[in-house]
Amino acid sequence: MEQRPRILVIAEAANPEWVSVPLIGWSVSQALREVADVHLVTQIRNRDAILRAGLVEGQDFTAIDSEALARPLWALGEKLRMGQGKGWTTLQLINALSYPHFERLIWKAFGDDLKAGSYDLVHRVTPLSPTISSPLAKKCARAGVPFVLGPLNGGVPWPKAFDAARRQEREWLSYLRSAYKSLPGRGATLKHAAAIIAGSRHTASEIPDTVAEKIFYLPENGIDPNRFSQVATPSADGPLRGVFIGRMVPYKGPDMLLEAALPLLKSGKMALDLVGDGPMLEDLKAFADQHDLANSVTFHGWMAHGQVQRVACQADLLTFPSIREFGGGVVLEAMALGLPSLIVDYAGPAELLTPACGWTVPLGSREDIVHGFRTRLSELARDKTPLKTAGMAGKARVEAHFTWARKAAQLSQIYDWVLGQRQAKPVLLDEEVGDAHAAE
Image 1 (cartoon, rainbow, N blue to C red):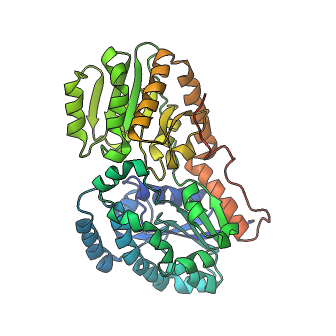
Image 2: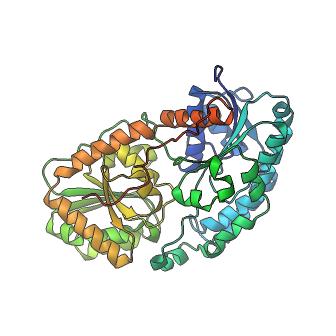
Image 3: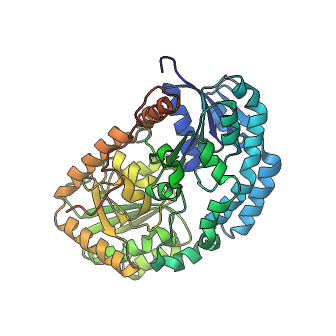
């Protein structure tokens, strides 16, 4: 557009001081300020952090107080999920019930402005879950204001071989998750959205073919170069050094990693750093004690997000055998540091990692993954030469596609298409992204 578009960005979760979805909501909304005039609408719980970040309330953002309904439903969800960090599908069901109230309050606050043409389009960035409909989509369509939805991501199927991990995570509702496609409002949301951004291939596959012409593929995670300014500088000599970063829970596979690496760890050919906390931590420590791995395995526990890269930059390789990741942000962060990855070829991480940037192991049984990791780790322990080349390729890929500034430029292309400023539907990523396979 000749003039910068005026965007009302809705991000119920947008917080510069948190991680995961709130950080995505915040990062996208801020990056968009480079290409558009943005007013952020978020939930009241984020207000203080946004003020500390320097935004001006009323001018740069509006905080909507939906706590009268959100707080009691959130408390109910916490009880139903039966454990901190568990029962994610249950919590999303509660969010699906409470979120429409948030959008009704947005319409009450901004409906007149939207009908008066004060904004060129509305973009709902969060929630990311494709199970949560948007009452605003239809209202914006009636007001003649294009509504952009996404990125949407979630609901990657649990691998059949890891049903025990599903039960340990108390994901009872995940057996019924596909029922969300019949929830009231989903059809209207997709019908009235001018563009739908899918953050994963799986999510794109769940969107009906009737709206296929409006779908854009763009993974939701991005990198702030100021947060990831270091470059991995592992020792040229010595054993292969791997690092695991994540919650110590069954589906992320830290136990599989220890089992796979055990012969190398015992022989001194490999060292391993494990960063994170969770219910498996004590059992993992017991395993290390049982096998006398004190000199080769370091448990760092929970670390502040900004400190993790210090440990990661001392490693040769991110070793991450998770069998169910929606976005795989940790892989992208490793790539930004010039650190190659070894992952399971499934879902989010496999869509980010290309053959040039690391290695994948086919998804299979626990025994298959342990064997695959052990084989690849043994090869890299014998010859570390490919690691640096793969790390630099990953860093270059992040700079080309996955910084927040780059994502803002990609979203700007969608806006131009929606607003009729370009005829051809933009392709945001080259075909190599999302088609990772084992590098030979």
